[in-house]
Image 1: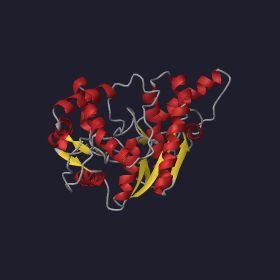
Image 2: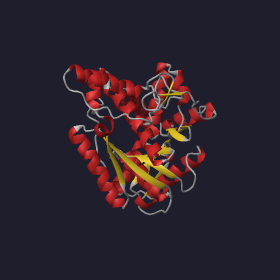
Image 3: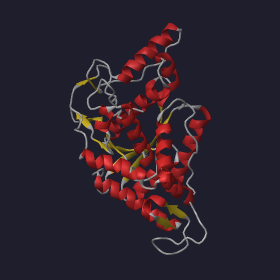
Image 4: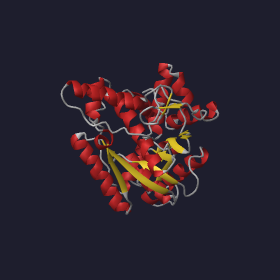
Length: 339
């Protein structure tokens, strides 16, 4: 991303970063200004956050979520950083270490919650008992717990580090597969839902949706942020990376294509999907659902039966009024990816 002799498009000093999609070159300081402005523009354009609003930031330890955490703080938001420990060996330990190092650097607290302690079974145990794809189960459990924790904190909005590559890749996959339901629901903001005055579904926002992955990485490297590199070791078989690779290929050949593809889709769509409609609640945890038990509680019930049959029964911790994100049985599903 650098060439000797480049001049910064903003300050005319020596530049280190070339951004072909914007026909721009930046030094480290001006790259930071550019990135902050892109995030602020996305927040304003899609009405993600009010000035100074309190928001939960889901941080994994990767470059995207750590950059999200820092930029939201720089823009004046009250950020409650949340890390979910999935207990996936060295990868999870490295993820937690990165988040803790970032917390020390920012001088900010970090909430760390362990999935096994919250649910009474590990992600691996739940996957094995239900014989489902790891990413599907993991995503369901994380959405459930994030909503539950947002309800405990009474913070109604959660920000994630999804960026332009993620959104454009997801859009391409859904178009190619003809997943109209997911296309109808694809938007950088998904409204939440309150049940009896309590947060049932947290509002989901994606402030990095105007930024490419390489732009975020250049910023993270310029500041030497302590992020963890590499993908989740259990993501084998996920299809989204293939669509992202296709989008990046087109972007290399025709800079700006990725942004035009995604933002053009949003412009043609004209507006966000309708907010989720109130339905029933899970008999066990109180989550929004159209059936007796939400998806998370059904996963845990099968896990309980599986371990009981094998002579060991993990403690089920999906207690009263824990709040789950919806899936196919829930109103206004926030599991809106299709990939």
